[in-house]
Amino acid sequence: MKTLYTINGFFELLTTSSQYKRQSTEEKKLLLFDRCNWFITSVACINIQREQPYEEFVNLHSSFLKRYLTNRNYKDIENCLLGLGILQINNTYSTNRFSKSFRLTDKAVKLGIEDIDIKTEKFRRQYNRINEERIREVLDNPLYKKIATNTAKLSVIEKQDFLVDAYFDPFDYVKENEFDRMTDAEVEMFLDQLALKLSKDKNYINKKKRYEDFYKRFVNLNNVDDPKKLLEQYVNYLTSSAKSGRVYHTFAFMPRQVRKCLRTKTNNHIWEVDMSSAQPSIIFLEWLKWTKSNWSDTFQDEYDLCLSLVLNGGIYKYVKENSEYFSKIQNYYNLKKEILTIINAKNYRNDGNKALIELFPNVFNWINNIKDKEDYKKVSHIGQSAEANIFVEVYKKIPKDKFALIIHDCILTTKRDVKLIKSLLEKRVRELYPIVIRDKHSLDKLFKEELVSIPDNELMENKLIKFYNKI
Image (tube, rainbow, N blue to C red):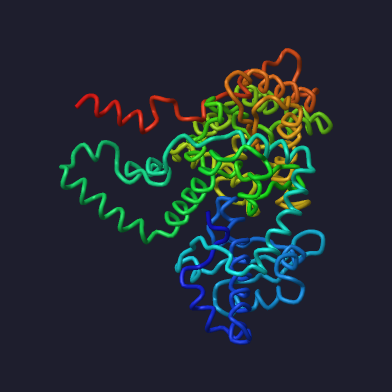
């Protein structure tokens, strides 16, 4: 497994820079190359984790850069990548709030990103020493260690060759039953033309690269059962927490299609327990709690409606069925994305926001007032803080002998422990919202369970055996 990322043809490009020409030995030139690649890796990895395009801006604190690139050299590396058109820098920052941000340029992304080894022993020693320190910090944190220990219990059970549908499904590009009307020659021509089109599609290329990268890294799980060795392999994606309390780790960002290819090393299928309509449900719960201290009789009908939708896990369905604006969005994923974007967006004066105000006037006036009086990011902070207060706190209480992994608003486990985790989540919600959730209220539909792992009969190897036995 290669250690870092680089840009295709980057070394040749680097040789044209003044920074490269100033280096007096071949070793120093390769050291410059290593340091530039580390910078590229740091930007790329954060966007891979966030499921964002490579060219999105990411914040990197100067202390983090200095740790790997040294106090004397980190600015030189920045300037080198900037001058070569590989990196763009946003120098805006706020002390104790956010640091400068960096992005890979369109030029860099167009050239393409590839894996590469570290070239110099000096940088390798420094890189390994710092990573050892960071890994110790993770293992000293009980929550982070628990996540690493449980991640090391996973195993990949599907081959990468069978993951094409994870980032390419031709049925997404045709109308319903359109393939049925094509001849074999027409289907072949269509697929060839589609492949050519997608080979030039930046979003598709980024998505494919991300899926392949996750798979390549996670297939190594099969040979690792020690959390420390696991962290050494995923050192560019070490566990961290946001101010909201939300926990970020490699597995939390794994694409769902890749996640389906995993089981425990004891061959147990993975199940998830998650909250129905999680983000809007949490926002509704926060509003319902807020109304108790700010009550108005005008809230009553909306209060009853929102509480009913939370308990029944039916917020998205209600929105789609009762809004002309949202009824036009056929794809469920796009519907969720649109609603969540509106809830968290800076500019809320748009048709989508107006449509939600029509359905939930008091809730969305409350949300919009928060954005006006404080900061639009405050809304997402409220949601994520409440989410962490539920899921992270429950995760901490799960016994150590149980397999469990937290992914923001859901917890992964095995079938035998689904009931336990569901009961812990229900108990936690009752603790946090006692004036909203009464003893008479059932939370059975607020949390739902679903199989994540591919069943045996759906594994491609078994499908092929079944197919050839019929011939």
